[in-house]
Image (tube, rainbow, N blue to C red; front, side, top):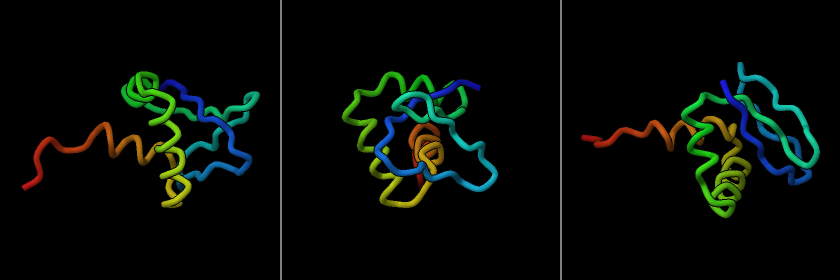
Length: 78
């Protein structure tokens, strides 16, 4: 497990049931995620990170679930 940092926008982060609650560190929330999700997050540009954070807020889903769907999406859907 590794951690990712998500900029605090003044609202509490959305946490899926059964997931660990992120903690506040300075102006960021720190989420525990799998290594492959953290690698993907760290390679993204800040604009894309902001889009994913906004998508999480808009859909009411945990940011970790959105990242998991992006990283582990199937290559081909029949």
